[in-house]
Image 1 (cartoon, rainbow, N blue to C red):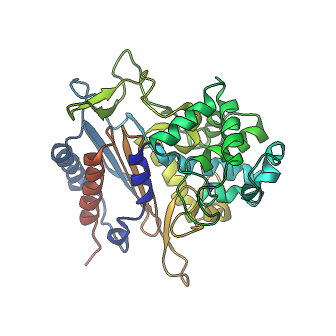
Image 2 (image 1 turned 30 degrees about the vertical axis):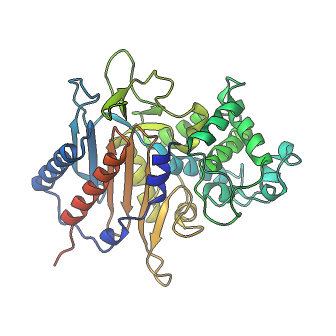
Image 3 (image 1 turned 135 degrees about the vertical axis):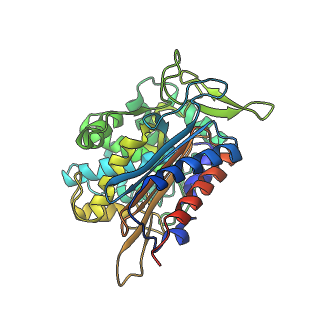
Length: 387
């Protein structure tokens, strides 16, 4: 992904100290007004085309708001039902889909790449043969980040000879696993490639594309209907928000969804190309929260725990995660953010207090990054503990 995604995705626990111990009063109209005012203020302060957010407490939406226009210099206003590109937040959905395959005993988290990709084993760099599926999803496999321009250019070279996206992902696995690792196996090094290769393994074992697997194993069971892949909307009408990039004069301009640069390559999907409405994204977030409490719909409680338990540092499987001291084992925060450079989205789940906050912006520059922090800080200050 673009460099901005690496920045936003790696700083996954920046607001943790604000969240811990938060307690929330019952929702009222004032909270709705507060959120609307916060988004309006952020939009003006940070030059945002549009921004939206949803706050859910105890399984109930207590505030939701959207402010701005779908495309700069156009009149169509955003709504709370619009779709937003969520970038690397896709990783949590990919990890959940793979966890369902694990529960079906199609694959195992402990399986090595040599076992999972036997036809490639002899071509792999020896260091990768013992890397496990879990390490791919925990960013500890030693793979390159695939976030800067040079890396993405090489990625394009690998996939351009084949129009079939499943074949492209196989080619990605073949090429990158034959190259030497770029970091020490077992140490954290953020990598989009790990999720792409993990998805390719799932595609090989099921004979279904990642897109079909996400729909079958995540979207459909949760009733998610307002979602898709790549830049949302139609090029003919402004029926969804557009992502935005700066022109030569530093002015944000909308990126049309049919622009070949409106998103990363389709083969990149498992690492970050889902677009989704905040209401449907909340369905996924709530299931993850329910899973912490032993009542999730998609997985067994032990499997949710596996997804949410850090492997190295604070990174779990597609999630940043923080627990209370080991003696209590209480999960305090699940979080991630994502951007393809033209959008920015963030998720915060606090299981101890049953709070979920989703926010999204249809630009992904430094001002958008500051805006997300501003919104987060304002919400945390508002949802303060009882005294």
